[in-house]
Every structure is written in structure tokens, then in C-alpha cells.
Length: 314
Image (cartoon, rainbow, N blue to C red; front, top):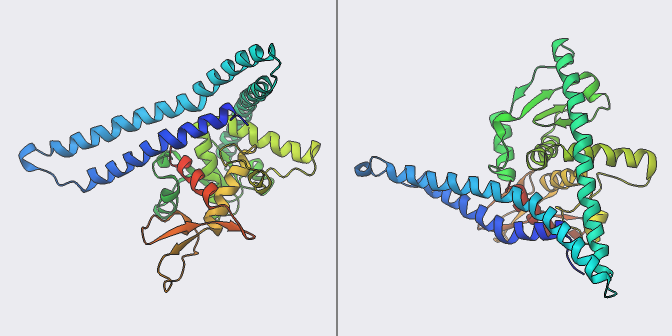
């Protein structure tokens, strides 16, 4: 079966962009460790960092192109080719093209709805802050940054993220955590919830308002139209062969990373060394072992590693 345009974009990220991102991270570590040559007035370190910054900017622009421009052009071309193939009795290409087109239109609709929701809730936030209905925002703590960095590396704008601890009036009326852009509302604090919500922050950085509309409409669907649908449940889709990147629901993507954080492990090669099963152990990078993630006897380690590579690349 031919890959959809979204899946093709994912393959480009996995085979081209992610290896470049890994090289950038190793280069960054080399720049950090490289000694300053006094006879060059430390220009050797400056040049090293300039290369890293230049490649990072290029990688960021390329990623945006792959995620949106490539997908749009791919969809248009596939529709044209599909119409041509239909004349020769082949309807498969056009059928896939129409699915791609529907997904593209749906993402655009999600973005429009998300922008409206974001604007409305931002007004609520401003009013509640002015009336002292919700606690003051705070930046991420040092501990929280250390917790998040192995998962996201430099793909999160950590300095932009703000946390609101405790009840926040209308915004946390349901009792659930809520993320609007870079602001995370945590009525009940837990580190795994913070990880979940920071996936939404990552989604906002990479897709702007689309995740907000996606989350809201998928949850509305589960409450009104499809009573059996669970927008947070990633297992049925992955068991059917879908990847993390192509999951229908933004909430399922965030829940998967939360579950990997809470239930993943790092298994040491040395049989005498106990495996690390503490929260976040999956995201260790250590040549003395390997990570693992399984639920009810089914291994999802590959899907988790693929998702992790994408998360580290904005």
C-alpha cells in the first residue's frame, strides 16, 4: 500500500532530518567541550558555535517545509496523478489522494477552530488574572527543566513556558490540566502530567493552533457522536500499525509520551545490575544498556524511540 503524504513527510524526517539533528547535538557537545585556544582569542569555539547555530536554523526551516509545504505539494500532485490514473481504470491513487486532501483540510479546520479557542481562553486568562481568580504564573523550575530536557532536548522553548499551579477558575473547571500555547494550567501537580502537557507545548511550537482544535473536537466527538471513542487511547491505533506521528488525536500523542515516561525502563546489559524503572528512565542515553517500553506484554519500544526522535526535532 502506498504511503500517504503525511507518512512520506514522517519518513523524510526519520531518514534525513533526525540524523542531522543527532549530528547537531553531538557537534554541540563537542563545542561545549572544546578547549579555548588562547592564540586564536577563542575564535575556534566561536566558529564552532556559529556552525551549530547555522545548522539549527537551517534544520528548523527545513522541518517546517517538510511538515507543511512538502505535504501540501504532495497532496496536490497526488490528486492530479490520481485523476489521470482514473482514466486508465486505477482508482487506488485517487482514493489515497482524497484521503490526503481530507486530512489536510481537516488540519486546516483544526487550526481555525484552535485559533478561536485560544483567543477566547486567553481573554478568560487575562480577566481571571486581573480579578486574582487564578494563581500567578511561574517559570519552569530547575528540577522541571532537568526532567524535560532528556525528552525534548532543545526542541522546547523552555524560557517561554509558564505554569499556573492550582485551580484556575473556568480554565480548570473540569479538574483536568490544560495547555494553551506556552501556558500550562495544573490544577493537580504531577511530573507525568507536566510531561503530557509539554507535549502539547511542543505541538503548539510545531503546528501552532492545530493541536487545540484537534484536542477539543476529538473530545467533543467522544462525548457526543462516538461514545466508544477514547481520544486519549493510543493502543488500538498503534496495534493497527499506525505510528505516533500519524495518530489521529493530539491527546493520544501526549498520552503515549506520558505513558513512556511513567512506564518505560532502561535495561542494563550487565545482568547483575538492576534495570532502571524510575520515571523517565526510558529517555536515558547510556551505552551500558538500552531502553524498553511495553504494555500488557506488548512491546512498543520502536514506536517510542521513533516518537522520541521526532520530539527532539522541531
